Length: 135
Image (tube, rainbow, N blue to C red):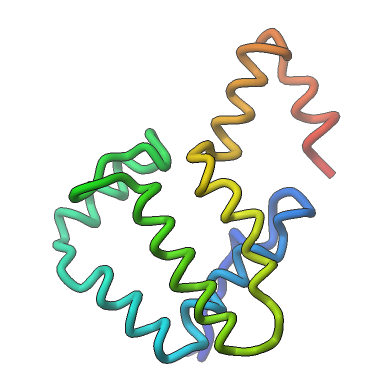
């Protein structure tokens, strides 16, 4: 059995974002206080809550209604917990979260931005996706 969590999503995406997801996980999991805060945040979630997020969040992103707010509200809380965890580590890693923080603050995901381009500027042509967004 592995003694670590492998996050495959962290090795893909735009170069400017490549360190953001690992930094989020480090901030959440490598600091005892952050782990306690994160656990407190989700401790009352039911299986139905998790199932709901599993189904709805991929469709409506940060706009997904959840509890008394949205996924964006939840993401802001998680970002705060991770940032505080990184600050407590004292390695100056918290700036690595800035790209995710920009997304969470705006409420617009990268997928939504690409869809906007596809339906607008790209005139429903996928060629720019391959020429500008792949490597």
